Length: 87
Image 1 (cartoon, rainbow, N blue to C red):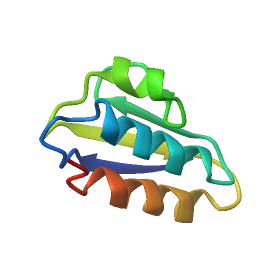
Image 2 (image 1 turned 45 degrees about the vertical axis):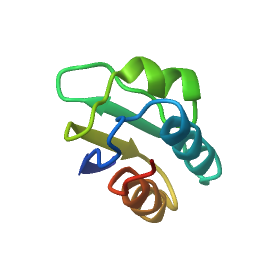
Image 3 (image 1 turned 120 degrees about the vertical axis):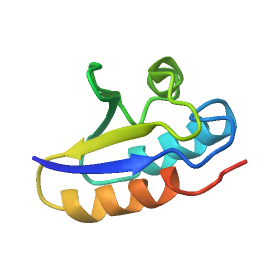
Image 4 (image 1 turned 180 degrees about the vertical axis):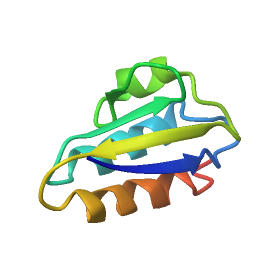
């Protein structure tokens, strides 16, 4: 399983508009991507509701994970978005 640790750059965290953009990008990937905060259970990154329940705020570190063919590229794409201020 591949993982990426990324700091949330959006000033509102992963909430509302950033969650929608992130979910759309994650759902478009060829593998399922999960996201979690350290010590928490992972949620599906392609789910807006899952992302909003994550409670990730600006500056929090999140862990993205995926497995299978294309996982590395998919994680790179989603990690780049998390590290961008989407506000």
